Length: 184
Image 1: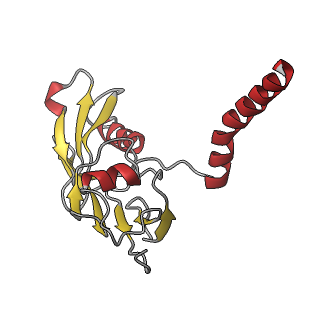
Image 2 (image 1 turned 180 degrees about the horizontal axis):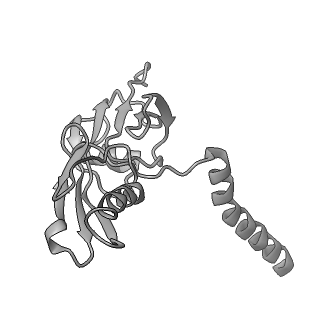
């Protein structure tokens, strides 16, 4: 009997540790956060307090930095924006500049459909559809609570994706909770 329990434990452990590998293989990609209008960032140019500060991306997705004027930041990852700022500072203003960027406040996400309080909510890292629904006051009695449609703000072409309660959401996403057709 003990031997059988040991084998069951090994099978469970192997199954448990194989789950993340299967999940990443089926999704095929890791979504890297892209900056967008409404994000607030901190730019630090090491050794240059005058060039460092907190900036918010405007409605066009641009930030205005000292010396560099406007830089298009929307659609770039944090590391891409660091590289862009570094390359603009290097030839004319600084020798070997070091730039670091941190996202202070993410743009909000939106939830519509069959939730008690649809609307715009502040994004918190690691949110799922279920936590978003909880922030919106929970499901209505008409909600299809095992399904959601998500439009990711990360993609240039806006497509709706089917999701479940555990699907991770990102800043700027639009979550739609559909209505079930039968009320029983």
